Image (tube, rainbow, N blue to C red; front, side, top):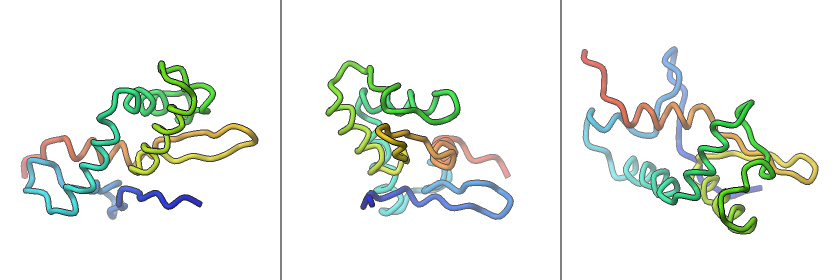
Length: 123
């Protein structure tokens, strides 16, 4: 069992996913919201991690075996390290199937990231 912290994304009644934080243009973030968003962006701030995240997110079926996404120009142990960091930031989940580990980007994470970076609709 992992002790990784996950972004606190919640379901809203009839509205889908509520991001960890409000859109940046809505109001200033609280300290907790800023810490959560910073953890997410810090994980994506490394080019190898961003490539791995993109490879998983864009993979057919919405999940990728580590064997399919490890060609990012670094050694396999380094790939594992970066995937672990993405999991700790709450950006990926994983499941072991036999000898391989499959990674998935939770749809709520993508939705939350998108809502954080969009303008709030005019009332």
